[in-house]
Length: 352
Image (tube, rainbow, N blue to C red; front, side, top):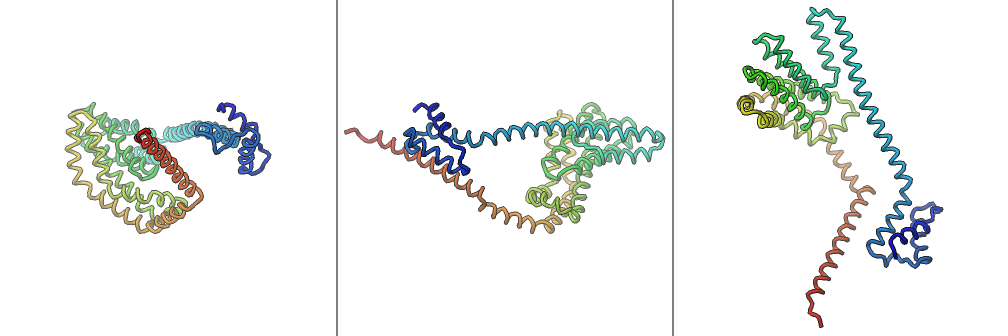
């Protein structure tokens, strides 16, 4: 039978009056056999595909329409979220700028406090590169030579800490933050070769101090983490534990990667600094292992419970269906292999 005719036959025979899906499918299959002499057991692969696709289209038509509507709404919501997020950032800038105009320009201490609060309030991740570049240039312009290095170290420490603090403590995110900060510092170092080593050393020291401060904060907050946030740590327990046990490696890898992508002169400086930093990361390793130990003491039992629940989930209806489909896929492969072997044997047997 023509495949198009086969599809139309099932469309016409499909009776949606039955409340049960099983009855609707059985009615269509039986009617096809009785009225059209279409026996499901005698159809080839393409015909079976047409029958099942036709029934699926009929049964899921409403769901497809609803899904398309939801996807359209999702896109609209995401655009709205992006717009509102941008407006929120702009509102924050406006508030801080308005307050700053009312502060005496000579009152350095009050301005520093205001800028500290601004750093803690503004979302830094999306504008980290520009912020680092601006901060280092400002430090170089406004600080005396003897003070510039310490100023750069402190501002990089604060930017590293505040940016990491905004989100989760995981390798991918921390690596991106450290890489972004170092890359911006490298750009300035390239443009100022006479002080490039000073800039890069101060940046690395600041990054290390900021990372150490972030992990120390994480360790302290583990004892007071709210119940609703515990599931995040439990779900990522193994990953976070692994990350905490290799923070020094992560730091050194970031520096090495940026060195490999830089000019020969900058690469040489970074490699030398990286070798020196290798011996200065003991405190970072120590605090990371302390955090790992605190996390282990507080969450290892909960993580094991979650793993136990995962084992239970393996017996859920969804898991059973996945297992059944796996067995069916194996059956299809086995059947195909059997047919191929049979065909090969037939071809090899001598003709009478």
